[in-house]
Length: 90
Length: 221
Length: 238
Image (cartoon, rainbow over all chains, first blue to last red; front, top):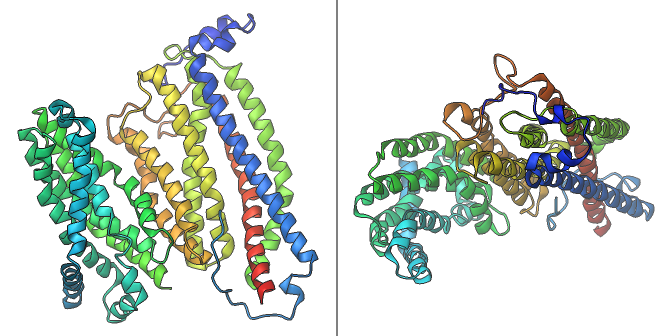
């Protein structure tokens, strides 16, 4: 199955023809479309989840800052670690 | 050198005092292996077919049981810091721990495995491959497990976490160990599979303690 | 608070770059998918299933690159203790896991019609599966500690230990007789793949990498916000 031996396949000959061969993918539709589907779903989900996490997190930070909780507005503290708390989810 | 041996002996003494631990590991091995004929029914062919995999997987899982506590106590009571200050490199401490773990877990499993294999109807000509494979494989489990144990010092759910981290790394070991037994059963040469196991062991002996040492350094910081 | 001085500058740059990267991603996916699905030939042996390559191979490349980035970020954290490095490693992990999952799933979907089996325990597939588990193990490990810095350091060590898997994945198809085919693009004597197939492949690879950039920036913002929240809550508790 050397990748070097590529040839001109069916899609050349049927490029003029509309959707039949495209959707059936030469009979391999059950494999090709789910592949693109799985990739699309996972990538979209990553994108949505990341964007939401960024938006929600930053909104919350702004909310707390507006409430005056920002330590940078207080007297400067020594830069030490806080006491350990429950870990955050990544 | 004496400090090194000292660590091993201390762990062994602890294990003997808490003899229940070794017994528990063996009991786990025994019970889980027994589940398969009980669940599968007594059909000898089916059992013989799965015997290599069952023996190896159960051996791996049984070895996992004691990793979460491997360093925890020493980290808590300052014993690790003392050893490090005494000049013993963390990597050597890890190696000593791995040896002690193998003596208290891997070795007993290695001895019990042929007995278990009888229960699973393993073919007669596969026994040497079983023993040789486990002899090469269980030290690797102890070594990799030490790395995992060092990583999870102070973590929540350390037991499950160690298994989650270490078991995937042991997949190649499992594959070669099982194929060695299956090859022996089919009358095919076993040498190449055992050589791969040996190669993994040869790589693990110098590298795993180094990795565990690095993990311990982060744990002590 | 000097630990966080750099991040402000970093995020200013990142937020400026983000829309550009997003546009680039959309564009590359658009053109790449067009070429992949419409404007490239079927393989004379594999038929139309070769189109799976255009989502499978870039995912695998991205999964490997992502792990390298994660290990590099982890190493930086161990050496320089800069929080952003820890956040970068944490940000990369789920992205890499996603790419690996895509590679595994599309690989199985490609393998079934081509090899007649969904899975085989050869060196390449096994080591990629281990890569997937390494990502999961990393995510579990960094989140298992009360002190996030301790978690970050433990995760960094794990990431570096797992780095040995990368050359195994890359060269497994050369060292062993595997069912998975050998490298045909990144080879010493140049790609052995036809140019009509190389183009969509590279376009899709560009799209994946560009998306990786977008995802990294978003996740870094999310993780940084989380750390700030933790700090703010700690400070408020005083």
